[in-house]
Image 1: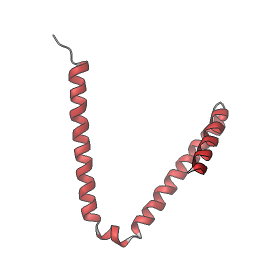
Image 2: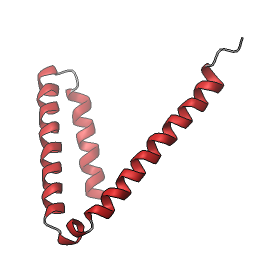
Image 3: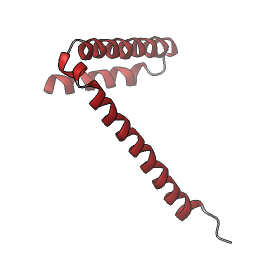
Length: 91
């Protein structure tokens, strides 16, 4: 855990000192996207090679769909409440 914090702190300090170098920032953005795509691919490989997950995919998919729908509905309700109480014009 300490190693992770040290590496993260070192990266933050390096980013702070290199933030005014547009070429380095642009290259860094591309490298970050490449790393994210690589990690997503490897996660897909790990999931696809796990027979337990593949067998339970219909149940997991249904649960994921339910969580997504409830999350969206809750966000819409919360947004409506916030809009009504803070931004609704009262005539």
